[in-house]
Image (cartoon, rainbow, N blue to C red; front, top):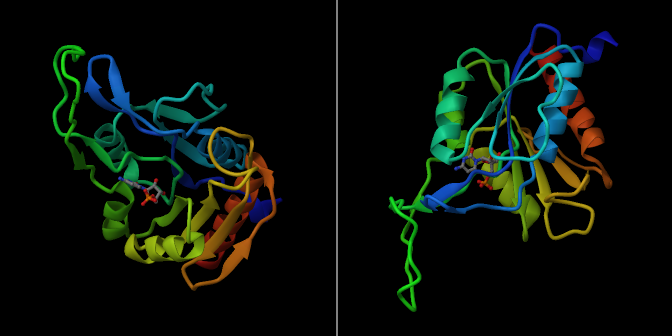
Length: 221
Ligand code: C5P
């Protein structure tokens, strides 16, 4: 099916959550498994795209025919993404990047001597927002995991980060969100058009997202 072929296209995908170290043995993390991003990478590669997957820690195996770069922190993810960005046609940011990291990482394991322990957190760079400011030919697709006001928050992110499309999921719904094989998403386009998809496997969601990306790529060439 040539309409859906991605031969000759270079696609950068991020997946899984980042880990922000507190000390040599502890970190701040989140519940992202990487399943959505790995499904996207696998499907894009199966359609003939040249795929680089920048992944936070995940127990998933490397998808076939995909170049995988494993990172831990948001800062490492940013470096890996920026190294690829200029050369790609499409970026899909399915990673759950930590918004904050510990201000200081202890060099030794923190001992349980105090009754109360405070860890100062400082803001991480917003990788996608930076890409939105730099973008030239690239199509930029973001994800928004929300627990309330799904559409409003996702629409705001699409505009603020200068995206072409955002995939919003309410992570409180059964059948959606973290560490399961299905998702329930709404796809929001730059022109404001919203499409609500039913509960689907993450592979089916990946196929639909990539269909939409292919349609945009076909229109713009
Ligand atoms: O965290 P937030 O809801 O703003 O995430 C929306 C999108 O921005 C996601 O695609 C996520 O991968 C990306 N993001 C990022 N860098 C951050 C935070 C989020 O690239 N520091």
